[in-house]
Amino acid sequence: MQSPRTNWAGNYAYGARTIVRPASLEEAQEAIAAAERIGFLGSRHSFNAIADSDVLMLFDGLPEVVEVDRRARTVTVSGGMTYGALATALAREQVALANLASLPHISVAGAIATGTHGSGVANGSLATGVAGIQLIRGDGELVWLSRGDPGFDGCVVGLGALGAVVRVSLDIEPAYEVRQRVWEHVPLADVLAGFDEVMSLGYSVSLFTRWAGDIGQVWVKSRVSAGQPEAPVDLPGGTPATGNVHPLPGLDPVHCTPQMGVPGPWFDRLPHFRLGFTPSNGDELQSEFMVDRRHAPAAIEALARVGEVIHPVLHISEIRAVARDALWLSPAYERDTVAFHFTWQRDQRRVEAALASVHDALAPFESRPHWGKVFLADRVAVGSLYPRLGDFVALTERYDPRHAFRNEWLDRIVFGTDS
Ligand SMILES: Cc1cc2nc3c(=O)[nH]c(=O)nc-3n(C[C@H](O)[C@H](O)[C@H](O)COP(=O)(O)OP(=O)(O)OC[C@H]3O[C@@H](n4cnc5c(N)ncnc54)[C@H](O)[C@@H]3O)c2cc1C
Image: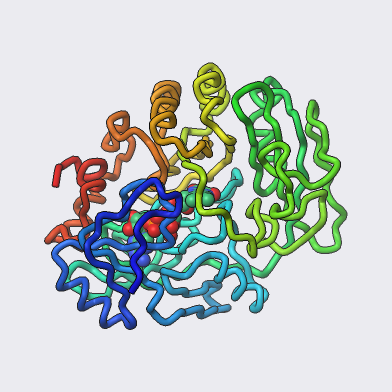
């Protein structure tokens, strides 16, 4: 079997000596029980060593599962399935998920394991849509946990440390339509004066900036109410875009989802990029930091003050909202959250230099880094950021007493021990 050598962005080369691709759940269970150290790989979209191990398991050989249960309002899917493939299957069934991340190419298990999110003041991360999860533990046994079960809140954002996620049940709702409109050149002062109001202009709102002046674009995605005319949205100070735009100024919007208020299916409006479009193989790095939304204006001002350091190595920043949740290692744990995302040029050394300033700027706000992106580990005291970390560690001891799922990254950053 051809083995994946690097992550999607190419900034991390996996050190794993062996790749296993089980063709059945039984094979996966046997391989896990037999492995001394084993990790789990989704679509390789993380930007750090979180997924690495001596042996890496891939899930693309397992039979694909998509089971819609209309009474329970859930769909049960194989963990390795991508959101893009799932959306296509759900469209046929006329049902939908509540939200999506910015791209559909990521796997369900990989996305929920890291707390991946879209935007919306009332929308939790994708992990909050998980109603049930099936894992293979360190002893090879299968366990199913449903929302409300003891330990469930600890194992959804599980960082791959609790076992192989082979099935996931996700909440569904009737299919809906969304329209999006974009405003350009919104003065920073206006956003600072009414941050919550701006983020509440639609179902999902994203702000794009290069930290060198105004907020370049505000994308407002609103759900369409059947038979109702579009609710007027006013963004004083901003200029409504006169055609489709790309978040990066000047780039052709051909791969962007349609804007200008044209209604379309949820999966073709909630991500910024179209389903069928395959993004280039990662000429970028990404970082993201999550802060309590009450601190959003102060945090924006702090980042703007170091804009000169950020700007030269940045493609674009996106500011999003994530609703609070109760998942122990979720970056939105018990905090209505503002997420500051950075798409960097692919220059690890210069990015890390800029990141030192970002960490310092956000330090007063106890920012939580995105688990799957680039951050400076020595600036992150995970124990103080996650009140339930001790319970998470205890849960991993139950699911993985031989520490087969641990790796150097988890030991250093999460468990606070060295391999
Ligand atoms: C272009 C791009 C756009 C992105 N957009 C967003 C965004 O909009 N919002 C956001 O929050 N993040 C975003 N991300 C980050 C991305 O969502 C996360 O890195 C996510 O974890 C990627 O999922 P994956 O399937 O590639 O996981 P991987 O990178 O393969 O793995 C990530 C983690 O999941 C675990 N894992 C994977 N599969 C399993 C399994 N079956 N069982 C147990 N554990 C498993 C791994 O062990 C590892 O700990 C983006 C990344 C890229 C490259």
